[in-house]
Length: 358
Image (tube, rainbow, N blue to C red; front, top):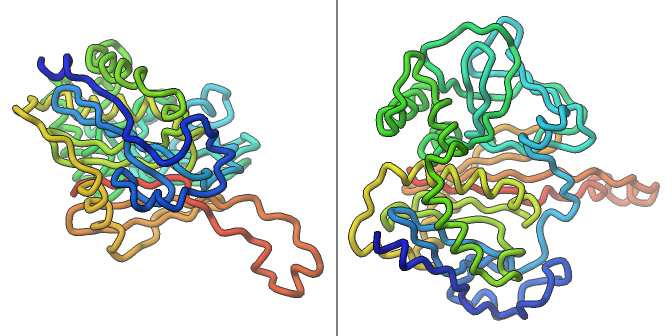
């Protein structure tokens, strides 16, 4: 297609030196807020990457990371190290599982991460952080409507993230909407099966089905300056020119752990959409307007843990989920306690934000 030849990923000119490391940047340059590519005083957009119906606009940090004490594990690496186990709750509950984190570090989980096994395949139901050395129930959604049996109560990771609309249903909707989206995607992908599991769609993210599109994305990313690549913290995602998702992380390190999983989920969303003629990528102003719609909506609690403060917003055009990471509380001195006992507890910096089109 014409887009393959037109791949491009040249970064907008940013107002900081390209060789300056993020850790050495104490604050955003004063002119960052006036940069037309800036989303905020902490992040900016690079030039978009166009692959068929999908537009990926990389987001880079232009200030020090919000999360500096981020020894956060992610689900796949923790399971590979056998530091996390997920199993059915007692005799089974469709929308709850037991999450055992035996690692010495918290585990960050994304709504929509696919886990398979147990009595039925599930996806994680909320964006959150599970504390170190903790056992607790976590919200999940069933993505296998026709099965409630199994030889084991244990789950493994499918190493896949649900496509955008399904992630949105997991974060902001209910079980009925999740089942409906799974069924629709199975029809679109020609993966309809007896139990209506999402597992086969998830498997296509790593079995080569999406390789042609993924190679185009990787080629475009490979053309980015190394300094920009190192500062990446997320993507603004559009389908046929319409903004669908914004994923924004508090640090490049955490984003890097999840980037492949994220990109493959975007490809899973886009692969069934025929590219329209003359797709116009959204401008930075349009991305900011999309995010502002959810930002201004009322906040509600989502799924707090001992390591996470979580909020969701419902705007007119977009939803928003925000995860704040509760850093380890420093030891308070006697003077601290007398002056202000609460002062010894640092605020929870933002570790992740998701914006999803309604």
